[in-house]
Structures are given as C-alpha cells and as structure tokens.
Image (cartoon, rainbow, N blue to C red; front, side):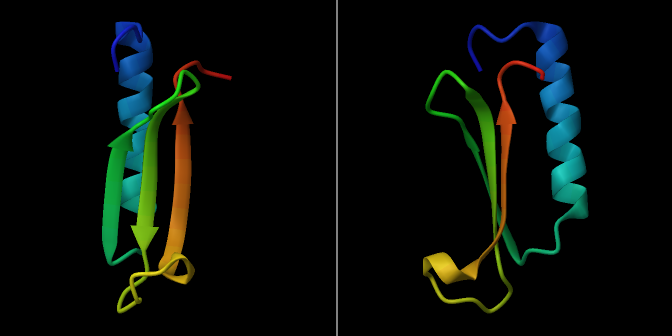
Length: 67
C-alpha cells in the first residue's frame, strides 16, 4: 500500500478486520489492490464450494481513499 497515508492504513486495517470477522466463508483470500482506486480486495469462498465463480460468497473492496 505504497503511498497510502498512515492514518488511512489504520482505517483500511480496521475495515479489513471487520470484514473478516463478519465473514462466514470457508476460505478467505486477501489481496492488495492492483489499481489506484482499490487498496485491498477480500474474497470469500463458500464452504465445500467448487473452484468456480459460483462458489464466491464474499467480495469486498476497500478503497485507497476514504469516501
């Protein structure tokens, strides 16, 4: 998260913790965003789901800049 101010990093971490804590997914994948708009993407896969798009039960993007 290069270039993201320290106070925003704290907000991003807090939102990430909230999303993960509220997830009911069997598997959670967390990735740094690849564009200038998204800091972190969280994807949850359904328990026992196949490895296809239908098994995604959580998709949450945390923006680099607060709204």
